[in-house]
Image (cartoon, rainbow, N blue to C red; front, side):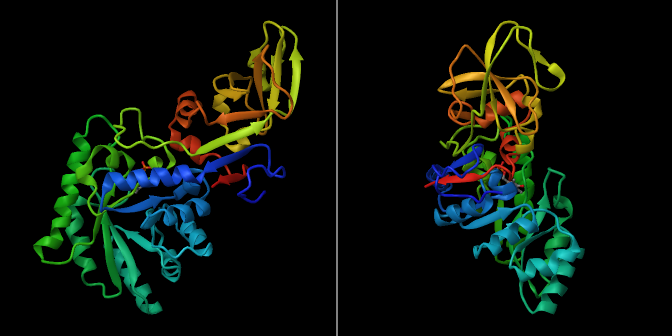
Length: 376
Ligand SMILES: *Cc1c(COP(=O)(O)O)cnc(C)c1O
């Protein structure tokens, strides 16, 4: 595997690579900051920072004013700590009990939604002689993880009797904040605020309350509360077609390759596995060294387009594991020419539409075989 590099012209880099514009990421971060004012920002960098490269992106976003990092997995948190990052890191996913001491050793903030796990954390922290930093997770209508809002008092109450635990935050997650109809999101927000009133009623200090993902940052300002958790918008995409675009953000990632083979095909020549496409007249065709083994989905076969020399051309025949074919018709291209797979006018939303998915899935599937190059 080639190491990530800061030098995009380095010719040892694989022809198929991703270029991430760090200045654009910073601009997106600034745009979020302006939208939320005094509210703290937790930059969500799970799934390899939505495919942009975990360590470099996390480091950069912290330097550009993120207060906190959010990841899905313990393993992602460890990678950040091993890279020397000392900022607070919330692991948002559910945990298995065996991992608790490891969380504590690496000073990772734990999400918990059960009284049992709260007690296990408290005991593990006592054994290690440390204080565990915990965020309580409340389910207000997503039905993923979190204690149901109507049973949450038990968890909040129990946390008051765990001497080794510091409840730094309390949070929930929206299921429908990206839709045009915000009814369900408003209901979730109200349920969450009702749960949080537990602290006010007892005259206790309020932990950091957070519920807003990108969609809620864009559409529901009253949900910003004490901290927001932007993911996709930091990477320059909007959560859905319906979602209000109240903040201007732009994509920072370009996925490129180069032409490695050129040929002319006669009429009636089938192309690639299964012969799902064939010429009906003579055409020029090029082969590009990228495939589903890199995360360029096979379902894009005979659907997607790429850009070569400023022109769009269709991907024809099945996308293979490591290569794909592009029909130039009678357009021009030479061996070595740049091929844009994603970037310029070809957004992750465009690829997502061809693949029947969302930009999130396109971005997070560009895998580790594709080196990331950073423009600064
Ligand atoms: C992924 C995630 C986010 C970020 O969501 P975006 O839609 O990318 O902004 C925020 N909170 C939680 C709990 C998540 O899992």
